[in-house]
Each structure stands twice: as C-alpha cells, then as structure tokens.
Length: 196
Image 1 (cartoon, rainbow, N blue to C red):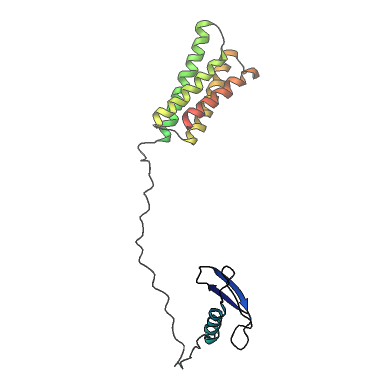
Image 2 (cartoon, rainbow, N blue to C red; image 1 turned 45 degrees about the vertical axis):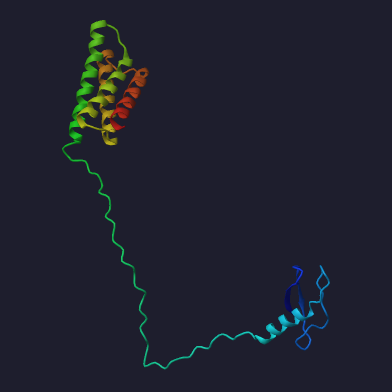
C-alpha cells in the first residue's frame, strides 16, 4: 500500500492508500469537492515512490590492523576547582567553658544566698525563689562564656539543681518532696538561658 496525498487545482486536499497495478492506479480518482480527475497526479506520486527503492544501510568495511588499537578516552574539560568556604571557627580565647562554669557557680551562689537571706530576714520560707537561682545561674554562665553552648546549659542545670536543693535544705533542715517543682523549674531556666 502506498499513501497518496493530492491537492486539487480548486484547493481541496485529499488522501488515500492504494495498491498500484503495474505501477499505476487500478481505477480513476476524482476530487471530492469539484469532481476534477486526479488520476494523473496519483500516477505521478506512485511513479516517484516506486522509482526510489529504499536504500540499504551502508556496509562497514573492516580494515586489517596490525594489532589491537588503543582507544583514547575523550578529553575532560578543564574545570577550575572551587575553594570551599572556610568554616568559621571560634577563637579559644573568646569562648571558654571554664569561665562559663565559673559564671554559673557565681550566679548560683548569689541566687542561693538571696533565697536563704530572704528566709532569715522575713522568717518566711518561699521555695519558688529557686527559680531565681536557675535564672542567675544561666545568666552568669552565659555572660562569662560570652555566648551559649549545649554543654554549658547542661552543666548550668546541674549547678542550679544543687544550689536549689542546698538552699531548701538549709531552710527546712531536709528536702521536702513538694519542693521538687522549684528544683525542676530552676534546672529548666538555667539550661534554657545558657544553652540557647
């Protein structure tokens, strides 16, 4: 089957498939719009199609070689390496964990002294002042460390806990379990301030 596409002189385009007989149309064809005979145009298209047999792919000729040939890999384009951005490092003199711990101890002592001093002055036990110990411990650590650090936050929390328990023990002569809330809030405040 050969596909035939014809454009009539009237401008109408039409197409059909045909099985040629002796290289020509077996029957006549007419334009569907004006009725003009399109057999000659169809025979011309058939003649062109039959005259051009499909070309076989070119044959490759093998050249005798003296031995195996080395195939060179394609050249890689020159790429200039990009220098990695320097990782900012903190000078050891700027951030000092020892100074941060010293600040936490100082803040804890001031807070515990204020809590016990209030008890001696007013004769009234107010365990929630332990929150102030946590705040002072965290700020003392943060100020002397000149920044924040997760390790410093954990250490500050431990120092605040020991200070609150010690101050409450001095006031009560024991540590009542109901005062555990004051210790927990104090630890949380010290960690948050020194670690973030």
